[in-house]
Image (tube, rainbow, N blue to C red; front, side, top):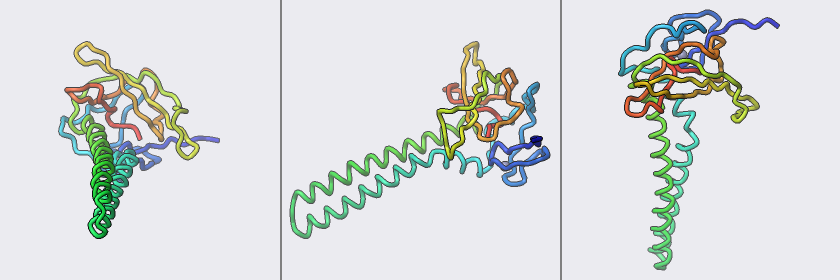
Length: 205
Ligand SMILES: [Zn+2]
C-alpha cells in the first residue's frame, strides 16, 4: 500500500496533503523543517500562538482541572449540607464536620486547580516567551508506555546547549513528521530561567 505524504499542523492537528505556509483552520505556520534543515528561525518573543493550540494544551491537562473542580465542588456541597443540618438541628458535630469537609476537600480542589494552571502556563511559556536556539533530534521511537485508544505516540527526544551546558527535552507526537529523524537539526525554544522547560519550534502534533 502506497502511503501518501501528509502534512500536519503542529498547532491544531489538521492534516493536509499539500504543504502550505499557514493552516487554514487555526492560522498557525506549518513547519518547513526537513531532515537536513530546521527551517526558518522562530519569530522573536512574545510569540502569538493559535488559540486552538492553547485549547489543546489545556485539554492535555484536563485530568487535573477536572479533579480540581470535583474536589472543590464536593467541598462546597458537603460544607453547605453539614453546616445547614448543624444549624437546624442544632448539632455542633455537624457544624464542625461542615467546616472540616469544606477545608479538606476545598483545599485538595484548589491544589489540583493551581497545579493544572501552573503546568499549562509552563508548557506555553517556552513557546510564547522562550529564547530560540538550535538543537538536534537525539531519538525517535514509539513510546509504548503511553497508550490511548490502543495507540501509542511517537516520542521525540532532542538536545540543545545553553552556555556550554547540554540540556534535553522530549515531546510526544501523535502525527509523527517523517522528516523527524535522529540527527535532524531543529529549533528549540527554552525558558531563560529554566532551560529544562523547553519545546521544539514549531511543536509536534
Ligand atoms: Zn492548524
